Image 1: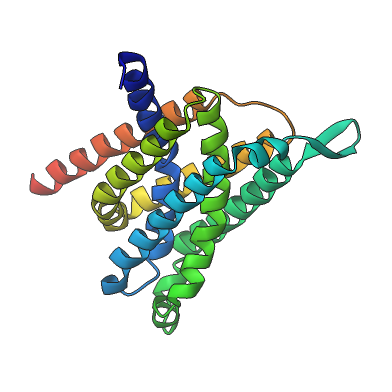
Image 2 (image 1 turned 90 degrees about the horizontal axis):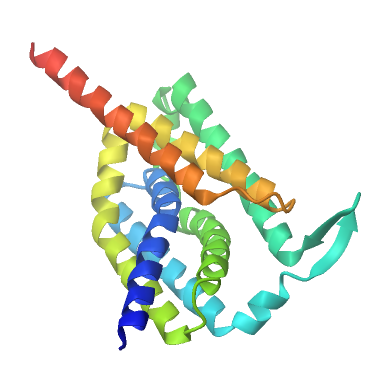
Amino acid sequence: MTSELLIALLTLTFLEIVLGIDNIIFISIVTNKLPEEQQPRARFIGLSLAMVFRILLLLGITWLIGLTKTVFSVMAVDFSWRDIILLAGGLFLLGKSTVEIHHKVEGVEDQPGVEKKSKVKSMASILFQIVLLDLVFSFDSILTAVGLTDNLPIMIAAVIISIVVMMLFAGKISAFINKHPSLQILALSFLLLIGFMLSVEAFDQHVPKGYIYFAVFFSMMVEMINLRFQKKQKKA
């Protein structure tokens, strides 16, 4: 383990954690539909699947790079399998987030009979949604990692470490988001933004992820200050 490899490992691990934030947010939102005792298991399975997908994609790196070749063109815009996957994932995320925001704002889950029905969502249904987004997020994450290093063991180690870190904090993040309704709306808004970004990326319009994640963290910090202010107001 040379100093260069160590720096590459730390950089990739940090990158994978940052890129995995949207994954944790989505998992937190959808697992909230399950009974409380099943939520930790669903989060663990969801993140474990994310790790498996990313390692498999790394092992099939030649096949993965082949997915960036043009499959067809529409109005002078070339589409590869990568673009199709990103577009499908982006549209799914936009649709799912919009429906969830509608339910929260309109109070659909609080209507008589609806809450009971929403809480009996099957584990299979939730995991299916997580698998779909895991594939998209993993695909995007690995393509980014490939651009930083060509050392396969380092990339696999970074993926494993980052997923373990996310597993350790996923429960606390999920509980915190679900405890505060305003944070739930903010988290769903982030997913809308990410869904739009994935859809735009499918049309070869690169959006620097640094801007997206800066907006996410800035909005989160403002909301944290707002929650702290509201807490002090109640005490007063």
